[in-house]
Length: 89
Image (cartoon, rainbow, N blue to C red):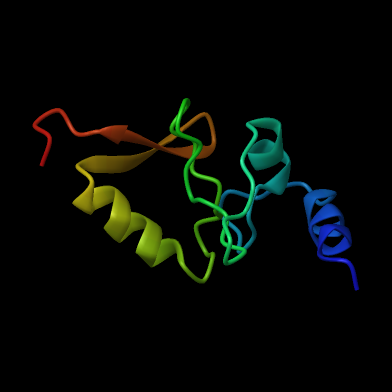
């Protein structure tokens, strides 16, 4: 099966920020593509929009990575976003 068919099928579902999925539609619109390993990044860098649902199996890794980079995850208008912490820690 063609991998693009799988992500096209997944992308056609409405993204639920509280769910287990990934927002492929927004990622593609932002020009984001998977890396060599097939991994899609967790955050849209310009807006800070988190592209994984809260119950995604690797959400904890996103939280850890954002914290280590000096960012904090917050919710705005029903979506999770990330911003640099005011104190940078």
